[in-house]
Length: 356
Ligand SMILES: *Cc1c(COP(=O)(O)O)cnc(C)c1O
Image (cartoon, rainbow, N blue to C red; front, side):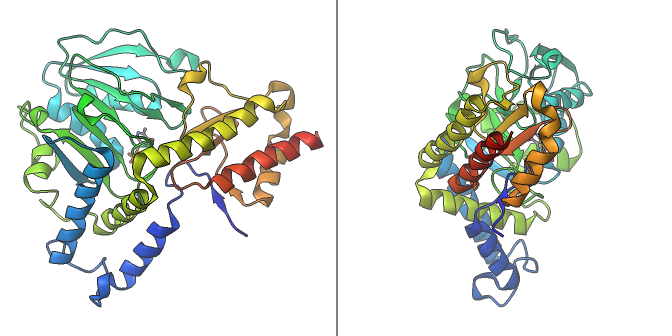
């Protein structure tokens, strides 16, 4: 049976990415060698790395004065690297979810942290607004998409201090005004490629602010100065990311995928709002994520959860169980999740309603 993969991460990837990666694992560009066994300093891999950076620059329309690097350790490693590199006296953070709060925890190891606002007391059902960013902070850290709670900052905010964004779960889902950010980073395994690689887009002027002595592999300059080749990079994961970016370019780029993503999200939110069984736990409609759609049964229908899971499973729907801290359901509808997949889920919701 055809599967519709709604997993939150690692998550669905374009068939194009999976097929081309499988081929390159068997035989890279007719070299007779696998991408897994070639040197990261070979001409073949250098070309892959170069094209990956060029395509990311093109898709996101990254202005001059920014470097693109690939690292390991996931977004979680960036939670520590960011303060290690850029927190000299104090940093400001927006606490919009548990990933954000994990980033705060790491930053506290390096200096003073001002949490400008938090929606934790309301279980992160909205993104805090109306806060003040201290003008003397070294940087301001935000999470553009809160993967677990299904809230998303859909606009590029302005900040009086360098703005650093964890965009792990919405990178390349919409055009971004990169010039508003000093750094955008994330793990690849939500919307870009397999686990094992993370990306960072860093403004060169931010790198000049690094003063702390730290281990070589924690210093962003190591990656920038050595073009992500100080040590062995995750070659296969980078190759896969490149395939996804090629797929995105062929599809028409970020404007085109953003339109499709909005259509998919609207379809699902409309059904949640219409269906008598379900409700969105979010308190502000404007914050609804177009990547992770969270919904729960109304209290009077809550005991039907298992039955609904059975029905969706019978239709090939995979990975919609909600995060343990929210409950209910979470449909992650990343770039590669087809419209047909969303239609199948909506159909299941309608069918289930008719049975109750
Ligand atoms: C998944 C996720 C992370 C953690 O990523 P790892 O690569 O597993 O460390 C951090 N931030 C956000 C927004 C995420 O969705």
